Image 1 (cartoon, each protein chain N blue to C red):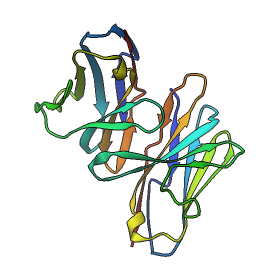
Image 2 (image 1 turned 90 degrees about the vertical axis):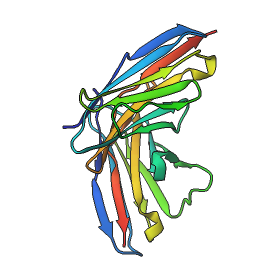
Image 3 (image 1 turned 120 degrees about the vertical axis):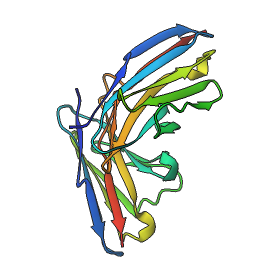
Image 4 (image 1 turned 135 degrees about the vertical axis):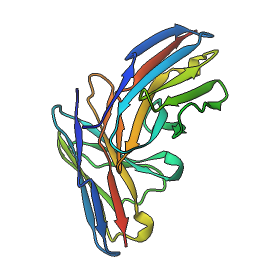
Length: 109
Length: 115
């Protein structure tokens, strides 16, 4: 059975700090790993990772995938209060998308 | 942990037919369930919010008469794609809100292909 585990479950930091969110996966016929930011309802797409070792960046956010160790990290530098959200990691493989339970990130002003 | 299932996982149908997709919360009661459609480049689009015992709330641009949602019980919501067309081919995902934890749990998705 496919499984995606995120850690930590919850994280509270001060504005300006850098955070690293972790995602490990066991996905049959793995195709890609997806990161989303969820604030109210619909998750916002952040990254899709398919290749190992290649960092993807978008502003203060970056992510990398390790297909040998089956994990990915999402980094957020110089955090802002608007970064407060639940960050979801999903593993896509074999026509099935499995999400982790998310990391709830809270940024204190 | 909380588990959400979807049935079927994959369906292929002819144009003009209707397809029903089920979303079940297996070990918890979900007062609210959400239906998403996954577009190219992996973005998820919220289609509607389904509350048990009441009418679903559809997002702007989603046809209510085409995508019928029924949340008959605290553990089951169904999405029926009526008179399906090839452009409805997509990956449909549901999630269930456990309420007390303010956490959404996602189903594994249903791949719909309309020929």
